[in-house]
Image 1 (tube, rainbow, N blue to C red):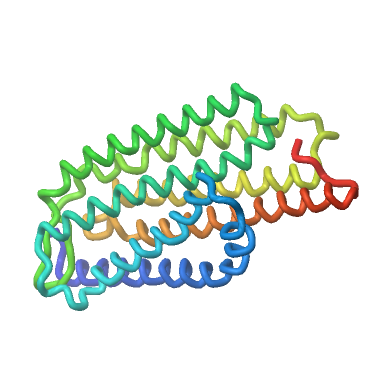
Image 2 (image 1 turned 90 degrees about the vertical axis):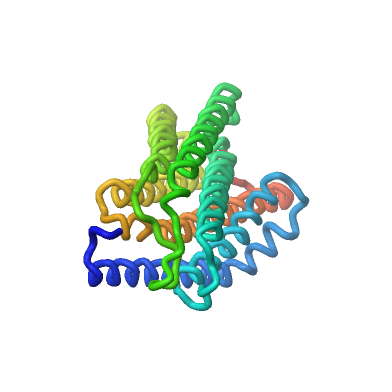
Length: 278
């Protein structure tokens, strides 16, 4: 970051601190707001891969962002070393890729209802998600091996810093490709389905699915553009804010769909007319 003036560097670090802190506040506030729904629809449900994945998102992400926010705030970091900074960076990248995979899997699980759980579509989307995850892990490995030497603890700033952008843009490419493919699948299914087959629940699923993948696409595109074009001191400007926003989006989508599924089952048990997931 030596090519940037001291004033620019200070302003960029300050902006990153504030935006990361804002993301953490939003994440924790939303966590409290949804806590009652989490207890009702998640903790009371039987243990499953879906439940474990959701709880991982709900608690691993806040823990990681709190750790990062404390580090970037520059408070009490006097004894950090370059190795600690590199380890924190590596752990954050891996946790980030895992949470992206889990979030997409949770959303796909609900969207399969739109596709009648057709074997070809379910396995095709799973294969696409698995390929995306594997590619993301490979890109993460390349980034880690390329970037570790560029990560160091800046004693004058009291925080971990990076001297070059390296292969950071690689991190966002696979996810963008998956979100584009998911949007295409949603659009195709919506256009193919006869108009009379659209029920209120179906429209809610489409709406939430479109919103989820559009939001993720926009957020990840923002990360990619910053990684490519922003000054080195700004390449992580929105990373943690976007991580928080993505987690909030996934949490709300998942809890909303769980609420709808329970409502549907209660209608069936009551012998009332109900809206089927078709």
